Length: 212
Image 1 (cartoon, rainbow, N blue to C red):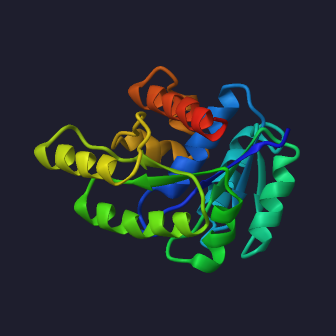
Image 2 (image 1 turned 180 degrees about the vertical axis):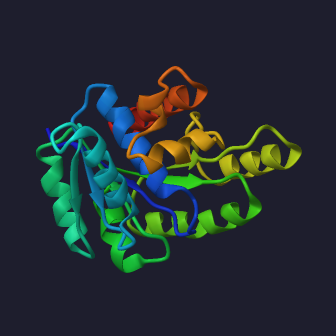
């Protein structure tokens, strides 16, 4: 049985796609699955994270396969990796149908990170329309969620009315940025912290949706 392709996509920049992709991949790995990362974002942030990971853990110690692709090659590369790995997590660029389109088309599930702000809510509508054109399945991933406030609660309610969202959320925590900077993840550095528990819960939920 082929592995599952999970594409992380959001047309709005600054949504935290690369952080979500890296944490989701490691979360799935720590839950016993073989995982490949595919970076189709020309900016290459995920590649820089992986290189930092290799420097820290050694080339054979990352626990992950890493590949890059561009344009229509992303679809072919994703399907090829899915023959050898349980999960293929794809990081995509914002505002680029040429680069993101094939990765969305190839996906078994698209995870769309969104911050609970009105601007992100508006931008997510365009992302969901793009996914719908490819007849893909999608789930919103609430990212950088701040402590409860009136505005946050209102936006979260509006997002859930727009499209199904994962119950698991990632909080607005400095630990996420810190861990990415050293080629790691919160779930590895502090697995029993709130951030670590959030990542574990999100990985379980995304996998359950992708394999349903």
